[in-house]
Image 1 (cartoon, rainbow, N blue to C red):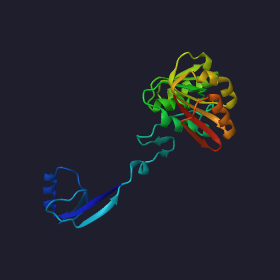
Image 2: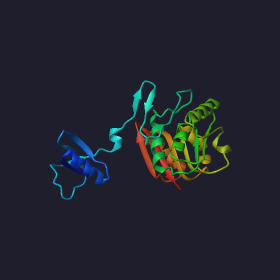
Image 3: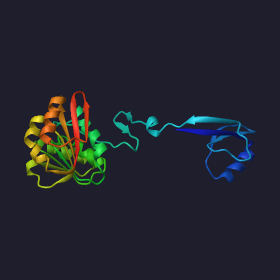
Image 4: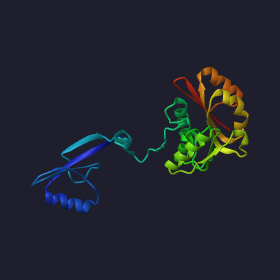
Length: 240
Protein backbone atom coordinates (compact mmCIF):
# COMPACT_ATOMS: atom_id res chain seq x y z
CA UNK A 1 0.00 0.00 0.00
CA UNK A 2 1.37 3.45 -0.95
CA UNK A 3 0.76 6.83 0.73
CA UNK A 4 1.81 10.39 0.02
CA UNK A 5 3.93 11.88 2.79
CA UNK A 6 4.12 15.68 3.18
CA UNK A 7 7.13 17.08 5.04
CA UNK A 8 6.86 20.52 6.66
CA UNK A 9 9.23 22.76 8.60
CA UNK A 10 8.17 25.35 11.20
CA UNK A 11 9.63 27.25 14.12
CA UNK A 12 9.03 25.54 17.47
CA UNK A 13 6.47 28.19 18.48
CA UNK A 14 4.56 27.86 15.18
CA UNK A 15 4.76 24.07 15.32
CA UNK A 16 3.33 23.70 18.83
CA UNK A 17 0.63 26.24 18.06
CA UNK A 18 -0.27 24.26 14.93
CA UNK A 19 -0.22 20.98 16.90
CA UNK A 20 -2.70 22.33 19.45
CA UNK A 21 -5.10 23.37 16.70
CA UNK A 22 -4.56 20.29 14.50
CA UNK A 23 -5.74 17.84 17.14
CA UNK A 24 -4.17 14.80 15.47
CA UNK A 25 -0.84 13.04 15.68
CA UNK A 26 2.12 14.00 13.50
CA UNK A 27 5.45 12.34 12.76
CA UNK A 28 8.33 14.49 14.06
CA UNK A 29 11.34 13.84 11.83
CA UNK A 30 13.93 16.15 13.40
CA UNK A 31 14.16 19.33 15.42
CA UNK A 32 16.63 22.00 16.39
CA UNK A 33 16.66 25.19 18.40
CA UNK A 34 14.93 27.19 15.66
CA UNK A 35 12.94 24.58 13.70
CA UNK A 36 10.87 21.42 13.82
CA UNK A 37 10.59 19.17 10.78
CA UNK A 38 7.51 16.94 10.73
CA UNK A 39 5.44 14.86 8.35
CA UNK A 40 1.74 14.32 7.68
CA UNK A 41 -0.13 12.07 5.30
CA UNK A 42 -2.41 14.86 4.11
CA UNK A 43 -1.65 18.31 2.67
CA UNK A 44 -2.06 21.38 4.88
CA UNK A 45 -3.95 24.33 3.44
CA UNK A 46 -1.89 27.51 3.40
CA UNK A 47 1.43 25.75 4.11
CA UNK A 48 3.90 24.62 1.45
CA UNK A 49 5.68 21.32 2.13
CA UNK A 50 9.47 21.24 1.89
CA UNK A 51 9.25 17.74 0.44
CA UNK A 52 6.57 15.36 -0.91
CA UNK A 53 7.34 11.64 -0.81
CA UNK A 54 5.63 8.45 -1.95
CA UNK A 55 6.07 5.86 0.78
CA UNK A 56 5.14 2.19 0.95
CA UNK A 57 3.52 0.93 4.13
CA UNK A 58 4.26 -2.72 4.80
CA UNK A 59 1.43 -4.85 6.21
CA UNK A 60 1.99 -5.95 9.83
CA UNK A 61 2.37 -9.63 8.87
CA UNK A 62 5.51 -8.75 6.86
CA UNK A 63 7.10 -6.93 9.78
CA UNK A 64 5.92 -8.59 13.00
CA UNK A 65 6.80 -12.26 12.94
CA UNK A 66 7.04 -14.88 15.70
CA UNK A 67 10.07 -14.38 17.92
CA UNK A 68 11.63 -17.19 19.97
CA UNK A 69 13.70 -16.28 23.03
CA UNK A 70 14.92 -19.49 24.69
CA UNK A 71 11.69 -21.17 25.88
CA UNK A 72 9.42 -18.17 25.19
CA UNK A 73 7.67 -17.50 21.88
CA UNK A 74 6.16 -14.06 21.17
CA UNK A 75 3.37 -14.26 18.57
CA UNK A 76 1.44 -11.58 16.66
CA UNK A 77 -2.19 -11.45 17.77
CA UNK A 78 -3.54 -12.63 14.40
CA UNK A 79 -1.77 -16.01 14.65
CA UNK A 80 -3.70 -18.82 16.34
CA UNK A 81 -1.33 -20.99 18.42
CA UNK A 82 -1.85 -24.73 18.76
CA UNK A 83 0.33 -26.26 21.50
CA UNK A 84 1.05 -29.97 20.97
CA UNK A 85 3.14 -32.28 23.12
CA UNK A 86 5.29 -34.70 21.15
CA UNK A 87 3.77 -37.82 22.64
CA UNK A 88 3.03 -41.32 21.44
CA UNK A 89 0.03 -40.33 19.29
CA UNK A 90 0.16 -39.22 15.65
CA UNK A 91 -0.19 -35.56 14.73
CA UNK A 92 2.36 -32.80 15.29
CA UNK A 93 1.57 -30.72 12.21
CA UNK A 94 4.77 -31.80 10.49
CA UNK A 95 3.26 -34.55 8.33
CA UNK A 96 1.92 -33.36 4.95
CA UNK A 97 -1.46 -35.03 5.48
CA UNK A 98 -1.98 -33.09 8.72
CA UNK A 99 -0.89 -29.81 7.14
CA UNK A 100 -3.28 -30.36 4.23
CA UNK A 101 -6.14 -30.82 6.70
CA UNK A 102 -5.17 -27.62 8.49
CA UNK A 103 -5.24 -25.74 5.19
CA UNK A 104 -8.67 -27.07 4.23
CA UNK A 105 -10.08 -26.38 7.68
CA UNK A 106 -9.12 -22.73 7.37
CA UNK A 107 -10.90 -22.58 4.04
CA UNK A 108 -14.13 -24.43 4.86
CA UNK A 109 -14.81 -24.29 8.60
CA UNK A 110 -17.36 -21.65 9.60
CA UNK A 111 -17.51 -20.01 13.03
CA UNK A 112 -19.84 -21.78 15.42
CA UNK A 113 -19.99 -25.06 13.49
CA UNK A 114 -19.93 -28.37 15.33
CA UNK A 115 -17.00 -30.62 14.40
CA UNK A 116 -16.15 -34.32 14.65
CA UNK A 117 -12.46 -35.25 14.37
CA UNK A 118 -12.11 -38.97 13.61
CA UNK A 119 -8.79 -40.61 14.49
CA UNK A 120 -7.73 -37.55 16.44
CA UNK A 121 -4.28 -38.73 17.62
CA UNK A 122 -2.79 -35.81 19.56
CA UNK A 123 -5.92 -33.76 18.94
CA UNK A 124 -4.18 -31.22 16.73
CA UNK A 125 -7.03 -30.93 14.22
CA UNK A 126 -9.70 -30.73 16.91
CA UNK A 127 -7.74 -28.05 18.76
CA UNK A 128 -7.19 -26.14 15.52
CA UNK A 129 -10.95 -26.19 14.90
CA UNK A 130 -11.59 -24.59 18.29
CA UNK A 131 -8.93 -21.95 17.57
CA UNK A 132 -10.68 -21.23 14.27
CA UNK A 133 -13.97 -20.55 16.03
CA UNK A 134 -15.80 -23.88 15.95
CA UNK A 135 -18.56 -24.50 18.46
CA UNK A 136 -18.76 -27.98 19.92
CA UNK A 137 -15.77 -30.16 18.96
CA UNK A 138 -15.71 -33.93 19.52
CA UNK A 139 -12.53 -35.93 18.89
CA UNK A 140 -12.58 -39.73 18.78
CA UNK A 141 -9.90 -42.40 18.55
CA UNK A 142 -9.67 -46.14 19.11
CA UNK A 143 -6.33 -45.83 20.93
CA UNK A 144 -6.60 -45.04 24.68
CA UNK A 145 -3.18 -43.35 24.63
CA UNK A 146 -4.29 -41.06 21.81
CA UNK A 147 -7.38 -40.05 23.77
CA UNK A 148 -5.18 -39.28 26.76
CA UNK A 149 -2.84 -37.16 24.59
CA UNK A 150 -5.82 -35.34 23.08
CA UNK A 151 -7.15 -34.46 26.53
CA UNK A 152 -3.73 -33.29 27.71
CA UNK A 153 -3.20 -31.07 24.67
CA UNK A 154 -6.70 -29.59 24.85
CA UNK A 155 -6.00 -28.68 28.47
CA UNK A 156 -2.61 -27.19 27.53
CA UNK A 157 -4.39 -24.96 25.01
CA UNK A 158 -7.12 -24.03 27.54
CA UNK A 159 -9.80 -25.24 25.10
CA UNK A 160 -12.83 -27.47 25.55
CA UNK A 161 -12.60 -30.53 23.30
CA UNK A 162 -14.51 -33.75 24.00
CA UNK A 163 -11.86 -36.47 23.55
CA UNK A 164 -13.56 -39.88 23.47
CA UNK A 165 -12.56 -43.52 23.03
CA UNK A 166 -14.91 -44.50 20.20
CA UNK A 167 -15.38 -45.59 16.60
CA UNK A 168 -17.40 -43.90 13.83
CA UNK A 169 -20.11 -46.57 13.86
CA UNK A 170 -20.78 -45.83 17.54
CA UNK A 171 -21.41 -42.11 16.96
CA UNK A 172 -25.14 -41.43 16.72
CA UNK A 173 -25.29 -37.71 15.89
CA UNK A 174 -24.41 -35.55 12.90
CA UNK A 175 -21.93 -32.67 12.89
CA UNK A 176 -21.62 -29.65 10.63
CA UNK A 177 -18.09 -30.66 9.67
CA UNK A 178 -16.20 -33.94 9.83
CA UNK A 179 -12.42 -34.20 9.48
CA UNK A 180 -10.67 -37.58 9.15
CA UNK A 181 -6.94 -38.00 8.56
CA UNK A 182 -6.71 -41.77 8.13
CA UNK A 183 -5.15 -44.44 5.93
CA UNK A 184 -6.93 -45.81 2.87
CA UNK A 185 -7.40 -49.28 4.38
CA UNK A 186 -9.22 -47.70 7.33
CA UNK A 187 -11.33 -45.55 4.99
CA UNK A 188 -12.39 -48.73 3.15
CA UNK A 189 -13.92 -50.01 6.40
CA UNK A 190 -15.18 -46.79 7.96
CA UNK A 191 -16.33 -44.64 5.04
CA UNK A 192 -19.98 -45.88 5.09
CA UNK A 193 -20.19 -44.72 8.71
CA UNK A 194 -18.27 -41.46 8.14
CA UNK A 195 -20.59 -40.35 5.34
CA UNK A 196 -23.59 -40.23 7.66
CA UNK A 197 -21.82 -38.16 10.35
CA UNK A 198 -21.63 -34.72 8.67
CA UNK A 199 -24.29 -32.44 7.26
CA UNK A 200 -22.26 -29.70 5.54
CA UNK A 201 -18.54 -30.40 4.91
CA UNK A 202 -16.31 -33.47 5.07
CA UNK A 203 -12.51 -33.15 4.98
CA UNK A 204 -10.51 -36.32 4.31
CA UNK A 205 -6.75 -36.80 4.24
CA UNK A 206 -4.09 -39.53 4.49
CA UNK A 207 -4.29 -40.59 0.83
CA UNK A 208 -1.01 -41.13 -0.99
CA UNK A 209 -0.77 -40.74 -4.75
CA UNK A 210 -3.38 -40.46 -7.48
CA UNK A 211 -4.29 -44.15 -7.25
CA UNK A 212 -5.43 -43.90 -3.64
CA UNK A 213 -7.20 -40.62 -4.35
CA UNK A 214 -9.17 -42.14 -7.24
CA UNK A 215 -10.15 -45.20 -5.23
CA UNK A 216 -11.24 -43.06 -2.31
CA UNK A 217 -13.37 -40.67 -4.39
CA UNK A 218 -15.05 -43.68 -6.03
CA UNK A 219 -15.83 -45.15 -2.60
CA UNK A 220 -17.02 -41.76 -1.35
CA UNK A 221 -19.41 -41.27 -4.25
CA UNK A 222 -19.33 -37.47 -3.89
CA UNK A 223 -17.68 -34.85 -6.06
CA UNK A 224 -14.83 -33.08 -4.22
CA UNK A 225 -15.18 -29.34 -3.74
CA UNK A 226 -11.41 -28.96 -3.34
CA UNK A 227 -8.38 -31.25 -3.65
CA UNK A 228 -4.99 -30.34 -2.24
CA UNK A 229 -1.67 -32.13 -2.50
CA UNK A 230 1.79 -32.02 -0.92
CA UNK A 231 4.76 -34.35 -1.30
CA UNK A 232 2.60 -37.02 -2.91
CA UNK A 233 -0.11 -36.87 -0.23
CA UNK A 234 -3.68 -35.86 -1.06
CA UNK A 235 -6.54 -34.33 0.91
CA UNK A 236 -9.99 -33.33 -0.24
CA UNK A 237 -13.08 -31.53 0.93
CA UNK A 238 -16.65 -32.32 -0.02
CA UNK A 239 -19.58 -30.01 0.52
CA UNK A 240 -23.19 -31.18 0.83
